Picture (tube, rainbow, N blue to C red):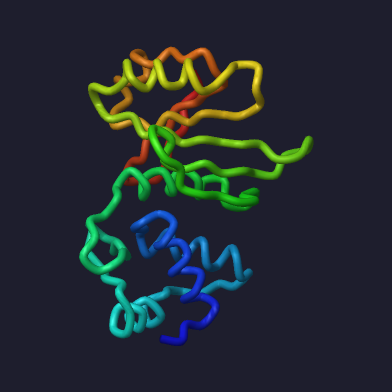
Amino acid sequence: MFFNAYQKYIAELIDEYGSLLKSQLLRMVNQKFHVRLANLDAYIAQMCRFSDFAELPQGGDTVVLHRGHDPDYDAIRSVEVMLGFLKNLVRHNKSRGYVAVRFYVAAKDGEKELCVIPVKTGTERQVNAYAADKFEAARSEIVIFLLDSKEQMRLIQAECNYKFALVTDGGVVFFKK
């Protein structure tokens, strides 16, 4: 199947993250190619028809993923946090373990590394231990704990440079420690 540049980039993103929302793909395509596409419906429909991609309705949006795979909602939520930094985004990738997404943004003094760690209710203690082991307060990286609920903030007290994020119907809300 011959894909155009937009479709190739969409395929790369789905290969990297497993599944993303159409709205997320649209923002990333528009940013990368400096265009203002209204939607990607025809491009994604063609990918689903002639390749191994599928669409799964999700609320008012649609999850795009490889046919036969389950959506990775942690990746979807983490990418939503990353898209809050889209204008300064330099590069990004999915990570292994507790860190769902690692990305870099342009800053005055070079690039800043940000790590998004989804925190499921009941796993706060393990996430604290992981953050204490892997991240130091002296380093310039920023850890963003992606919470299920605002109540989790009091349960996380890591010794690193961190912030909290919560994905709501109105978008991503950030909280300071």
